[in-house]
Image (tube, rainbow, N blue to C red; front, side, top):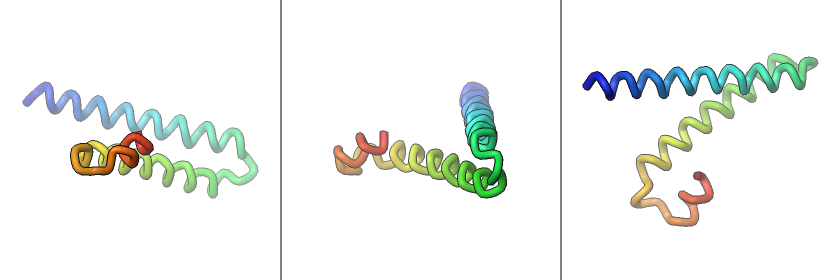
Length: 71
């Protein structure tokens, strides 16, 4: 159980750091529109995590072409 908790914590921290740098990088590139870029970047990060979760949960039942496209 301890290993599962550590793995979950590590995955969540890694995801949070990646999201931060992704949004911060987009905001640095498009500095004139910081708020819209922050919203767009945050939405993209949530969509990526949701898609990865969906692909993991439906790997055996999703059509082959669809799951490899999303991967």
